Length: 128
Image (tube, rainbow, N blue to C red; front, side, top):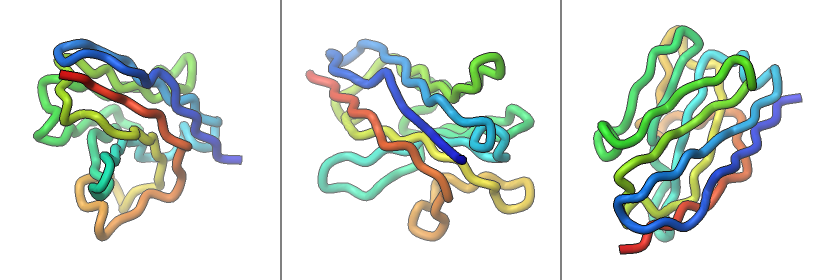
């Protein structure tokens, strides 16, 4: 059974840091693509960062240099370290897993590619 459970969300002031973690079942953790998405109120869901099974990562321009995606193989978790948080980072953050398309892990075009497995989401609120 594929399961993804996020934790680590909360409220923080601008400039602060949070670390999100996603506990993944073995089936989820073995999938080629694992990613973080977010959805702010009134906005469509957007890709934040993705990592493939080979450890290759990609981050959205809006978070590049501030957020880092990683996997902990000892714990079967997908993590997102978020530094220098801004009010515009306020959103519900979701982890997701998918088989990918060949060796490609799409995550930016959420309008044309939907990841297969999702967690329930965790709220991140950044105040100014």
